Amino acid sequence: MELSGSRRRVAYFFNETLPLFHFGPGHAMKPYRHFLVDDLVQGYGLDNKMSLVRYEPASKEEMIIYHDSYYIDFISQPMENLKFEKANVKNENFTIMRMYLLICFVAAARSLNNGFCDIAINWGGGLHHAKWNRAYGFCYVNDPVLAIVELLKYNRRVLYLDIDCHHGDGVEAAFYSTNRVMTLSFHLYEKNFFPGTGNMNDIGVGAGLHHSSNVPLKMGITDHDYEQIFKPIVSNVLQRYQPNVIVMQCGTDSLAGDRLGRLNLTLKGHSNCVKFVISKNIPLILLGGGGYRPANAARCWTLETAIALEEELPISIPEIESYEYFAPEFRLEISPVSIENKNTSNYINDILQRVLKNVNSVEIAPSIQLE
Image (cartoon, rainbow, N blue to C red):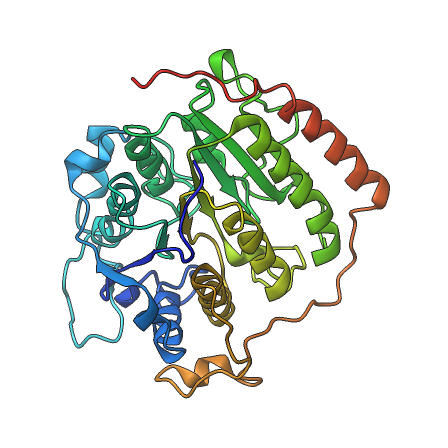
């Protein structure tokens, strides 16, 4: 299904308490990055050009559509070490689930299902590692899976597209044996790099055969090389599978200089992937994900919000409350770092051909019954 009309309707989902959580001083995940992106989006005036939706916490009933009930009960127990940041509160027993209730929601999916918007943005989501009965990789609940389950109520085919530095293993596992969801993950795949899954031989099973595609990258890939792989693969997937809706996980740990990632994309390279997908005019959910330099995550997701709105942004960071976090350059740009690009032209051509072979095994416009 393609969108009609001259301007896309964009909805931006937020909850102002999400950035207040804190995992501890040594933890790589910094929820305050969501304050930075919301602040920067407002600073550029983008909030006036889209629908702002303050979403409510997810219910247990919504989460156990996929997750195990006993698991949800277990992780809902009080955790002493998860407290509000910047709040004058001491000795409070907040639960780890309070944060994830704010992330794990299906409101964005419902907004597409009911025609409220064409693009739904939730930079707080994208926790793609969580399994149905256990936490994994900083992820306790798998909000992309829950969003996709909601979308499947009204859509025959959903494409899940992941450009995080880490393999979208949890989402792939959830839909590995169905042809109603196709998963496509571009990620770093090297020895001892988490989660260690996502090679080209993982292509689905049963009815889902050929409906999982993995693009394993080596460290240091540049904008140019990434584009050479991304565009032809995504184009072929869209042509063969013809999804009714796309869920795109836009983890920013694939950016140059990330604390945990080892890729070398600039702000332009990362956002061009989002721009390319948006240009296909298919209903879309944009999710966050990894990203362990908070200011860079904010830069990236703000720019990609602007792209969804078809707005151009000045390169200078506006004088906002969080202005000092964007020091020393105070600019909406991320430059490549000095790191070896191990993705040779032969390697790129090899993975391109092998992935396209799998994609081209997908039946064109499959006739799938709604269940």
